[in-house]
Image (cartoon, rainbow, N blue to C red; front, top):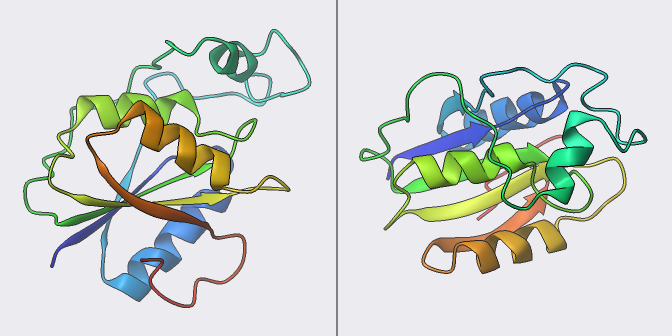
Length: 149
């Protein structure tokens, strides 16, 4: 069974969790990179006009990705990771999901967060993508000890 850990990381914390998860599960790694990288000002959640705040309010926002879609045909399981923003996945995760063929894949969500749980993020993704096999999710704020499935 081939596995891929695809992740978006704004500050490095989620990248560390993804590397640990990949090591524990034997998954390949793929970084989800926005075409325009977020600056510190873009990520200032206290500023209603910051890029991340505007994206949160606009459910149709789909930040463009750098590079081409990844060929997922070799993978049975795809872990998708991100930092929790306002209780949900950053919109760049929607872009990744919508630009790649995840049909027939088992999907596990992982996230990092400074205080918000993962439940709303998983529930929202399941609602947005009801045809995908999203198995659930887990916060990976500490050391990754085993598979999250």
